Image (cartoon, rainbow, N blue to C red; front, side):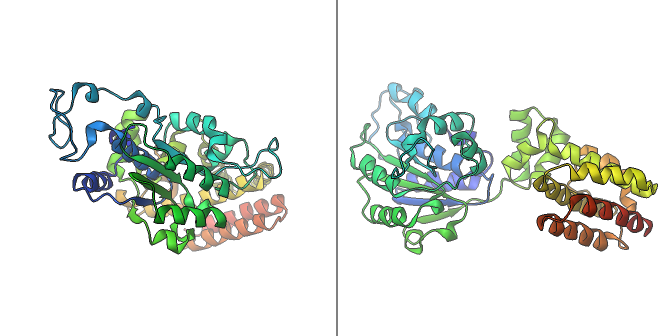
Length: 395
């Protein structure tokens, strides 16, 4: 894993390398940022960078053997310039991953699960890429309905691992994904470990909600904030990694708003959003032509979906109302629609205007509330559809 595989984030990459170059590397770092920004990818790339003998800082003691130079201009021995398969496969003995786990039915009642119990699942997941969500990890473990935590057993295992000497004589790197999921006992033990770290050990925490961590832990790490991925870098990655055309990549990048995971969702074949767009278009056309019987069938079709899916449609409805309203201003930078959505908006957008945009938002939000409170979905969506007839008249 190298920094080249991390999408965007040039500023953070340079800052991390500079810490090593200037020999100011703290023993504990915490990368914080929103989902899909690449925090885990950055942490892993930096961990591999620290463990690679070709990336020692100036004065790091590299021998002159004619193997080229490293990124700092220092000579690299020929044998050290070769690729390291252990790092490429993220199975280096001095690279340790800690992550939330669950208790499987096969485990005993007093078992405290640790990362090693799910090492195979973890490596299968990260082999596919270091951009994934907690839901992806839960599915990999087979426990979608459980609560994943980092147990005190994990802190004990980590203390044991880091007490051993480095296999290569260099750093030992401990990457802790989502440390905010540690239970209290684990957090207290980890605090002691950070306060008195083993020699040449670097902790790299990857946090999405740092405020949930103990203040005493937060005060003992150097925090680095990771911003959303910039649109240009994301569009470039979509073209190179997913084969999208330039215009499509640009649209997807803007819609994703710096979240690589959201960008991947946008381009999935058979995406749920394609269904939602069809449902939106059907609703608007039937409401405009006042076909009440067909609107009733539309509402019954919506009622056949699960409640979570119904709420996701209504959230999508709110998004399209906003986008169609902004489309009327003819300012490209204000709109975040796919090509299919824009094709529909060319003729439809004028029906979303100052006279009805607030009422449409209120209607959808009320429907979301009603669905969330287990109201009869057929009634909710038929009323929703009938109200649409009146609101589309106001143009």
